[in-house]
Image (cartoon, rainbow, N blue to C red):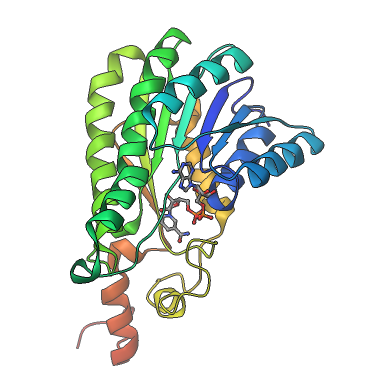
Length: 264
Ligand code: NAI
């Protein structure tokens, strides 16, 4: 299998969690993966593990909020791989306080990482991608982009990522660049581990379980690959049906309503 053969793909937040799963998946499909993260030790470990498994990966330290660092990293990745064909804006943080409890500093930090980071990434990478013969960008949003959420800063950034995705898709279509998003539901990672919301969220997920990191990675892989050649400006939820009707489904379960039975 080599659905990304010799493609150079940057993954922000690639040191651990979903980003690591994406990096491993892409490398297994023949990509050269640039793992970009603020976590240097973990990032180097992930790149080394991919290398030990026969894949190609290199770690590049990057804080996605740093405009200058983006320019330097894009230059370094281009020098390493000879071009850039894919970018996954995966780095993200949470805040988990309501609007009334969120300081301006905390609000600004979440916006800087989750939304401005994706903007800086797209802006820095797009010209190199055009000069590399085109490519694909995928930003990781969330079902929190669609629903009221107990982390308003997070929710706002994820809704913003969808606006950015659609706008960039229109802007870069003539450069041969497709721009899409993926919205995961609940997947247990360091981001949410131990959170009291996990189990209730699982119960509200129609498929009745947490998602697996590989399930997100597979969807991002699809959008990066030529199999998705007619898809741009789109968002794909990988959420076990949560966005489609998790609340209604849960109400039916709690009320003992058999959805397959004829309506009396
Ligand atoms: P994680 O916390 O395991 O991974 C996030 C990665 O982003 C870490 O490696 C971290 O060092 C990196 N990062 C944070 N700030 C950074 C910065 N300024 N510059 C560069 N890298 C930075 O979390 P997880 O769950 O793997 O999250 C990945 C993405 O998926 C995030 O965008 C998150 O919002 C999104 N997501 C996760 C869900 C889940 O249930 N785990 C659900 C929906 C979306």
